[in-house]
Length: 496
Image 1: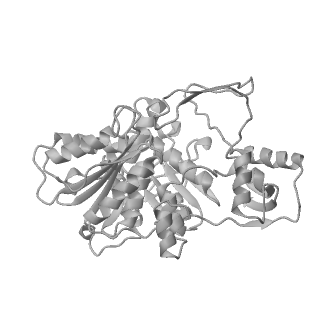
Image 2: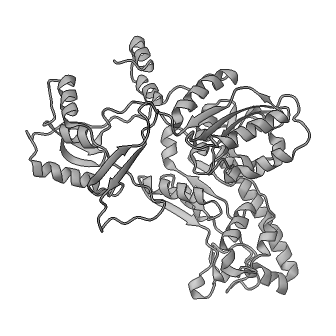
Image 3: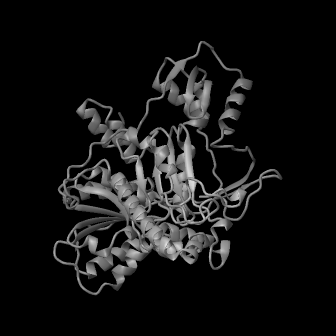
C-alpha cells in the first residue's frame, strides 16, 4: 500500500486518507483493487487473504497451486511504515483481524475452474462488517497523522473511506450471489449456513446451496445475524474443531444463540448436518449443541441430524449422501441431477511390444518423484495390527527405517503409497480382456505418468484397483449408462 523500500511513498494502492510521502495532506483518491483488476482476465486464479483467517489462506494457496494457469494471491501484511499502535508489529495478527472485520481488507477467492462446473467462480470469505472502519484507521499512524495535522480534511476523507468500504462490500456480496438471481432476496426461502475450520463444511454447504433451487448462497454462521434465521428454513453444515469445539467462524453465532432468551417465531425451521470423526469422544459435538439450542428456542427440526463420519468405511460421504436423500423431499425440492466429474483418460497402444525392467524402474521413479508426491522408498521393519478383527477399522503400528536423510517433526503426517498384488493384477487383466495383459505397453499423459508405461506397472502401483468404490462414485458412474436396468444394477452396487 506504499513503496516502503523508498521511505513510504504513495502508490496507486495507497488507501484514501493515508498521509505518506508525496501525499502528506492525505491521499484523496480511492486505492486501486488489484485483485478485482486481475479477475477481469477470467482465466487467472485470484485470492485476497490475511492471517486473520488462516484456513482461508491455506485453501487459497492449495487452489492457486492446482490452477492450470496463472495464479495471483494478494495478502494483507502490516508494515512498519503503517505505524501500528500501540505494540507495533507485535499486533500483526490482531491488526489483520481488525482489517478484515472492518471491511478494510476483504477476503475472497476467484477460481476459474468453477466456471467449468457451471458454478459461480467468486467466493467471498468475509461477508459481514463487524467493526467500524474508522476505528481501524485510528490504530495506525499513517492515518492519525492526518487527523492530527488537518482534522477537518481527515474527517471528510475518513467518511469517504467508510463509504468506499460499504460500497465495495455491497458489490462483492452481489458478485458472490451472482449466478443465482431471485427477484427479491426473500424469495430464497432456504438459508444455508456453515461453521468450518478446514474448509470441508464450507465446501459441502456451498455445493448444497448451488444444488438447492430455493437457496441463495452459503454463508459462514458468523456472517449472519441471529434474526436472519427467524421465520426461515435454515440448513446448517457444522464441522467439529479439536475436542468438540465450535469452528472459529461459528462461535459468535452460537454465543448469540445461547444468549437469546425469547423463542423463535412460528415458521422457523432447521436441519443440521454434522461432520466429525467417531473415534473421538465428542463426535459432532458442535452440531449437536446447535441442534439442541435451536429446539430449546422453539425452532422446528424438520429432519434428524445427519452425521458425516471420517471413520466410516466410505468416510464423510456415507452419512452425507444418506442425509441428502432425506433432506430433498423434506424441503420439497427435486434432488439435483448427478453431474459426473469422472473425466475419461486418453490411452493409446504403444508400438513397443514390451518394456525393459530398467525402463519400468525409470517410469516408477518419475511417478514417485513428481512435484505432488516426492516419495522415498524406505524399509518397513514391522507391521502389527492393533485392533480386533471384528472392528470396522484397521489400526496398525508400522515401524520404518527412515535412515538419516528422512527427517520429521512432531505432528508431521506420513503418507504411504500402497501397491496392488501383482498376481491379482495379472488375474484381473486376463479376466477383463484377451486383447492385453500386464506386459502390454500404452501411452498415457495422466496420473503423473507422461509417456509409455506397461499395464502391469499402471495397475500395480498407480491405480486403486481393488478398493471399494464409494456410493457417490457409483452414482456418477451410473450417469454414463443408458440402459435403465444396468443403471439400477450400478446404483445397487451390483457387479455389472
